[in-house]
Length: 468
Image (cartoon, rainbow, N blue to C red; front, side):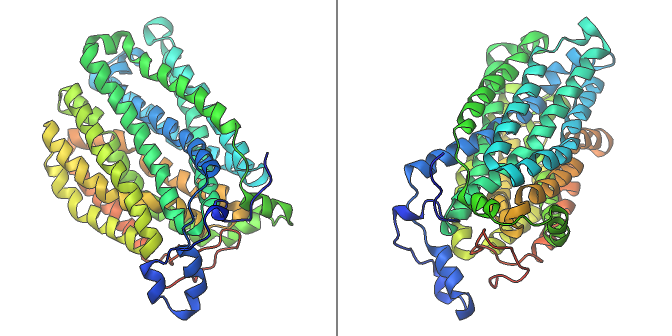
């Protein structure tokens, strides 16, 4: 491992010239120094870019795993739940999908502790290897026609293993990337976490579109549903290799070299940021999972053309991917709070009318999904940076991870099943009411959060930061 760079700006030595942001010219004198630091945007070194890319691949593979599960659930449901009708088997498969989310909080504690004690790299390596095991287990699992109930049990075990790994992966990646970025690029770099997440979702949906158009529904139901999980296994091996070559962050090394505070005491002192993270994640997760499951939802509920809706989903996600780094860069200039508020207000206002457009048409799905994801990209883009800035270094991964995983477990994992149930009970479009209410809760929480864009990540956060 190479010698560490100075904390909190590991790419800072490549180009020392600062670039003043518009916000820094108008900030009060008391915050002039932090604003100057936040406005410094040195050119990242090739080494920093390589570290960034390796840290991002785990997030992409994670979401690829989850996307192919929800996208292909309608095809492999009968393989694991042979009894009952197609819709019953589909709902049972989505319940297992939720099990993976429920395992995330435990995974965040286990792997978050590894990250905060042994380093971000160690945690990322452990989570990548664990997720790979769960994915391969689904790929090779026998069907219900072969081993009966054992097939469903194997699927549950695989989803639990994946959930444990994914509960620790994203918080560790967020901490790692936030700590290697210079303050003036933290929002932009952190936005790339969700670019990689979107890329994983696009790749999973794109694979679904290709397989459904080339092999057809019958082949996918019979055997070809295994192909995406085998592809995910190969991607998982690549992720393990790349992560194993990462260096630890200098921010973590600086903290680890000093006296370690009590984990429990630090967690208790961080109760306010923990609740804020849960509140922010609630709306983001429900809104994001609503659209992430939309292709499979259209296939199961509207009996839509699988190829058409999968391509529509790909197009909407690509549009959101383009806007993510733009929102992140904007937050580095005007602050985190304004960007978060713009996004939440936009999603809250548009979700209900956009959901009313959904009728099985891929064109309407593309319009609704595209508009909503572009707006949702605002809070999504800076969530990793914002969470890292709210929580102390010594408990950053476990503090962020547990709060984030708890919210995604409670509110995210239930989205596909609730979506299908509400569609059958009150009509397909009425899930928009639930999404809107969740986003309004997150909007209220966002109003309580201080401006943090100039936070020095080696210092303990306070509840008073830069003015909004």
